[in-house]
Length: 418
Image (cartoon, rainbow, N blue to C red; front, side, top):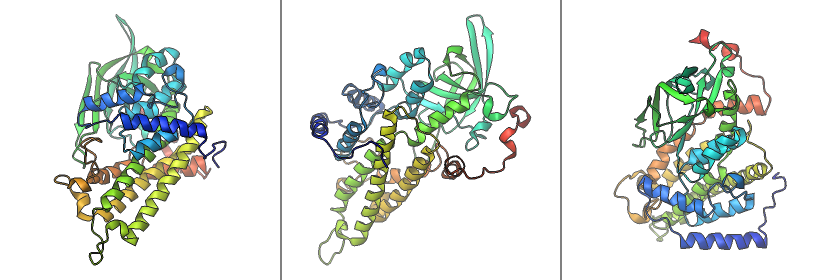
């Protein structure tokens, strides 16, 4: 059940839709091929009130209700409007700061997250601490210097999305090696431009370098950049992961709806049964595949409304967000395979794609928006933010209450494991 969410649109909702539709029809993004162009479009969306719509007004949001946010999402999908940048900052880092940051931290960082004046990334995974994130070894040692007290950070992170663009990050680091591993971790605001930070891009199967390795050598972090208290990092990380796994479902719905709408247009140009001049869209098997994808996206849409309703009541995503993450990541992989089966060889073209068959013929979504990119990129969704296997464990243990797996390291002391 969706609680108190009324899924019918009121006259006020339809009036709001008319305003939103008129705005998007009058403000086109144009080609978004450079980071500067994407940042400028984000700023346009932000100034119009379409970024951080559900965030509190005192921190730059609109305190918008679920239906208003859904209407904006529907209109963006209808016109294939690109979203903003700073997805990590707005999707889950900003909400974590709102939940756990000091008032000074909120006032300093949240407005610039919303406006994308400062881009954020997330320094979590390490070479030997991915699915077993609590086994991380990057350390932060508190030391006195002539100009004050700092945490000195040394270590390495990996698979850090957007680290090469980021100004700031949230960092998980070990501040106490002599307690059980989950209890010795702290959570920091981290300056990506500080001396001692090195970012090395990683080449992906897509040909791009969205992920990075990040190395820290004696990096000084001001003590006021600690979020919460020392040793509270694992608890705060769960808040961030809850938002990450389930917090931006509406944005995913917008993305999938727009792609399916474009796919329908493309299928009108692809020949089907040559004997009667039919197109791919007339093929009953293709229609069946479309039906499956459309139904699954609608399920995600209603779950997005549920989460928006909870957020409006001040409720944060918990362990149940793993259900959302498992659903949408496996759905995306499944949909990309279905899309490839519909497009055939045209789905595999990276260059020389006829405009009438391209995902992004006008360049408005940026140069990475191709059918083949989406197919290759979908594999990452079943790995980042916790693999599908990890999500199943969380659902079994923390949602369904099944017996936990026997693991010797649940009470292990980090220093003994080093």
